[in-house]
Image 1 (cartoon, rainbow over the protein chains, first blue to last red):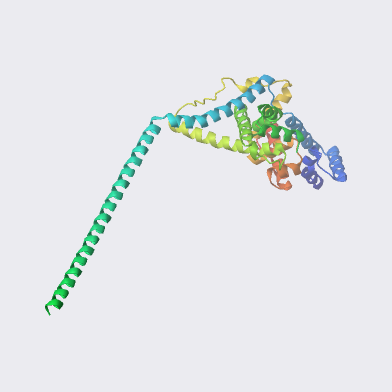
Image 2 (image 1 turned 180 degrees about the horizontal axis):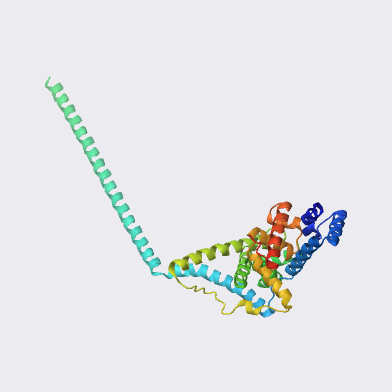
Length: 157
Length: 192
């Protein structure tokens, strides 16, 4: 394999696909292929593969493509109904009902507990207030007694 | 971007089912063939191409038109191909573990291969079969480049943009892919 073969092989795919922009370079590859059997065979093989591959399009009758398209719409609809079906199923499921009842009961118990704590707190405050009032009243009585004692001492004197 | 595509997409966004049909009709063969080129499997290509359109229609609102619609479809097709591969791996692992047969509810009940339009001579058909088989032995990137060049007819520069690699790398993958396919077509055992 000579130097010219190596240069041609580097460009042979570009030549097959018509992608050598430099006209002189394209002409050089073509001239070499015309005179070198090995490179000509390589070019012919690649060209045949490229041409055949370009026609390798799978095709079906229109009815099959219609089925393909219909299948897409059906799958989209099925996905949508699965999505909403999940929510509908959730509302009607036994577990959902159980969870609902449990939530209501928990709220009721929490409310009752809160009310009990609040009532206890109010009673405690009321008791403290009453105690303070009694202390004040007692102090007033003592003050009055002191006053009368000092008055009687003054009169006696 | 193709004006018709923009109009169709606008109509789909407005809720038109007819527009969705127009979009599928326009691209379904191309997407199917891309999926078939990637998988060399008629049934997988059928599922992948349907999945591509489901994803496109579900997310059409997020398509801004920055790239051509085909480039957008191509990327979704590649993602669907990789997703399908991952799904197959998990399913086969599960089947191996439980020794169960597949009970796919989407089973079509017919073989897609039986529906293909056959029109060509034996030699061409035989070469096509060899190329399809050889494509199975290419790496994912080699197969992508081979398809974009030969089946889609894109220029090297365009492939580089679509795949996100340099032109030199595209050429290198293409050379390697063509060499492997040529060896398979010649009936040689030079494939790696």
